[in-house]
Length: 175
Image (cartoon, rainbow, N blue to C red; front, side, top):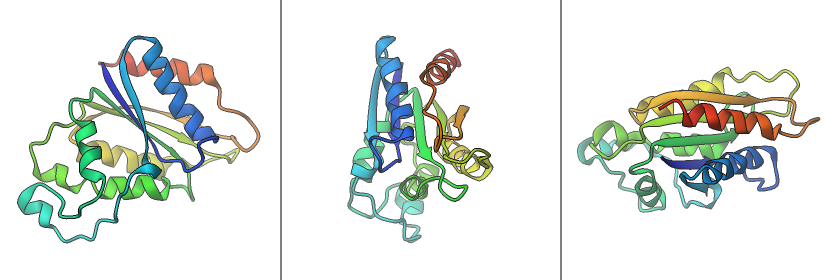
């Protein structure tokens, strides 16, 4: 199985990055072809709504998004990991989702399945909006939504590595 983890946390020592990297390592340990990409390291401009992709199936902006989309080709499972920001996904995850517009208008190879990891500091986080955004990304990619791992209370507690491991096993067996 080919797995691509996209992490949208600017903090490489934070909870979201830990959960994303733990997911990656568990996949590798189980013999899967897996890779993690830090979305903060991608040169990604904001979608300007020009609608050129409606005609060509490609974005006219020359940035790192085309290379990222190439990485997504042939992926069996795309993992979208984001911290919760004001009840939504992080700004870089939102930018990524906005740039998926060409997938509506192309026969580009779409990931087979998508899942999400969302980390929140609050003891009583409201994940609904962020989860809706991630599911919308899966729909735009014409991919099956496989599930989500919602991790709250990270201001007081570390991410439970065993919960991440169990989520990985569920995702790998959901084919």
